[in-house]
Image 1 (cartoon, rainbow, N blue to C red):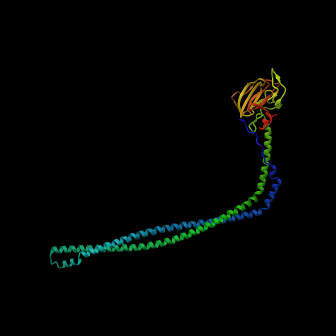
Image 2: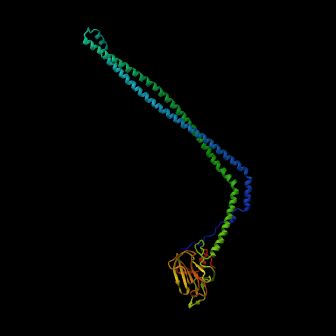
Image 3: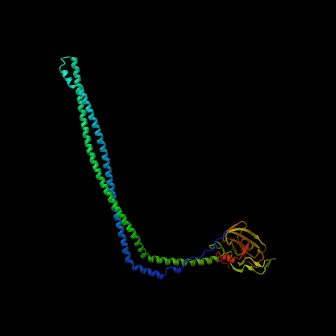
Length: 395
């Protein structure tokens, strides 16, 4: 995989951050405004206390409302129960009166007076006398029952009247309690509105006052923090610059783009036309399709980026040669590796900066070095600007 090109350095301009003189001036301003800060803090405290007190009143009125409402509900339930009892008693009284009336009518029809006179003039007829006495006894029982029914009817009527009076009292009490509850409700609502109004005013003032406090109290802190931030950015940029320079010149150490310097040494030959080189019966071409890095014999050779090895073996004038596919049509080649100095084979996956070989002078080479080349598709290009674009400086 090909790494992305190096990003630009941090663009922050150190001159846009406060200087040390700015920090000292901020300290002086803070000292001069200390009295104003104290006054503003006192105003905010008073506003908060006012809101707390108003909210406490609202809570108290709400509690009173709930208690009054509960009493009103209890009175209403009691009135309903008494009314129901009064209605039942009135019904029972009416039933008792009707029963007493029917009994009186029956007594009247039975002819109670005639039975007494018949008994008086019976003349000693025993059978007739016994019958008359029996009738008289029955009438007395009937009369007694009528008296009992009447008394019961009267008692029920009295009970109904009393319960009705109690129900009226309960209804009146309920109305009064409901009025108290309504008054408490209105008081609670008024207190809550007052609290909310005070709170809104406090919040509006607090935003303004805290903004002033923040400006007065934090000017020094913010200026100093901005100064420190500027220093940190300046130091970070300097450290990054030094690290990038070191990484760009350190073989086998990937930079932020993912690419790495393939070997240590100076450039001994560049990309372009050159004289033919003949060694060991092999002669190079007259165009140099890569660069030569004077590594010295047995020096480590590193993969310039991660990828897959597509060639590892002998390749004519290149001697021992390794070629790596980095994806996207980009390949790198490493030539003149010493015999026995190839550490990876075809199909191996390598990582950026991995030690893949050891330098030698095999092929058409007159000294130990690394011939390094870059393929963009099928065309070999100059490795120096290609690697420079990725943050790697060769030589």
